[in-house]
Length: 353
Image 1 (cartoon, rainbow, N blue to C red):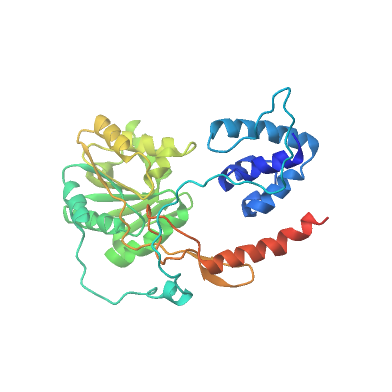
Image 2: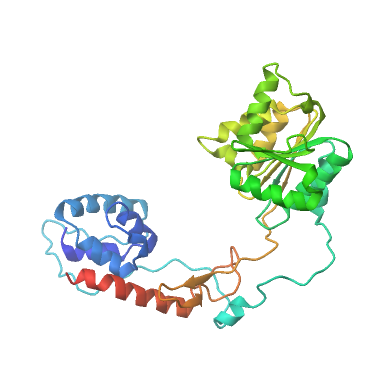
C-alpha cells in the first residue's frame, strides 16, 4: 500500500478509530489531534506500518461507511491519486441549540455555598427510610443526591429502637472521615471505630469499620465464637457497595451480605452500581426479607466542565454551562483555540526532527 493510499484511508476514519489504531503504537496518542495523529502513524517503521495496515483492513470491513479505495482490474490503468484527501460524509450530529458560547464568568456563576433554607426530603429518600423498617434497601442514585441523609435517618431510628448500627466503608481514610462526621451528628460517645490500626469506643451503638473487619466479625460468629452484641444488631450500612464488582475485594462484600444476621436490615449505598436490579434479586433470594431497589439518574446538582490550559488559562469546556446528557454538545471556541495552540507548541518540533 502506497503512503498516499494509506493517508487517504486514515483520513477517512473518525478520530475514535484513529486512536484505536494508535493504541500501543503511538505514545500519548490521546493528546493528539486528527492531522497530527495521521502524520505520526505515517512515520512508523515499515514493520509497524505492515501491522497497522492489517489492523486498518479489519476496521474498514467492520465500518463499511468508511470509503475504501477502488480496486483496479487487470486491464485497467490505475488513475493518479490526487493529493487532496476526500473526506466521507459525516454522520448526523446531535442537534445543539444555536446559542452563543458562554463566558467564563457565566460558567462560574452561582458556584459556592447556597443560602440556608428549610430542608424537605425527596420522595425517594422518605421511601428508602420507610422501607428499611421491613426490607433491605439498595440506593443507586448519583453523587450528591442525598444518600447520606437516608443513612443518618435510618441510624437515628435504629438507635431509638435500642439497636446497634454498623457502618462500613472500603477505605480507612473514609472510615476516619465518617467518624468525624457522625460524631458531630450523634455525639462522640455514640460513635466508635474499628479498623486494622485503630480501635476507639468499640462499645458505642454506632460502629464504623472497613468491610473486611465486619466480614471477619461475622466469620467468628458463624464459627461459634459469637459476639453477643450481634444479637442487638439492627442495621448494616455498606457504603460504596459497587465494590461488589471488584475482582479482588468483591468477595468480601458478598460474604458480608451472606453472613449478615437475619434480624438486621441491610442498606447498600452507591452511585455507580451497573446492575442494581440483579443485585437486589440476588439479595432477595438469600435473605429472609426481599430487597427493595431505589434507583434514578437525575442529578440534584448539574455538572459543569472547564479546561485549564498548562499555561494557566481557564476556559469553559463546552459552549453550554451544564453538561446535559443526550442533548449533544460542542466544544467552546476558546477551548478549541487552546487545544490547537498546545498541540502546535508541543508536537510540531517532534515532527521536524
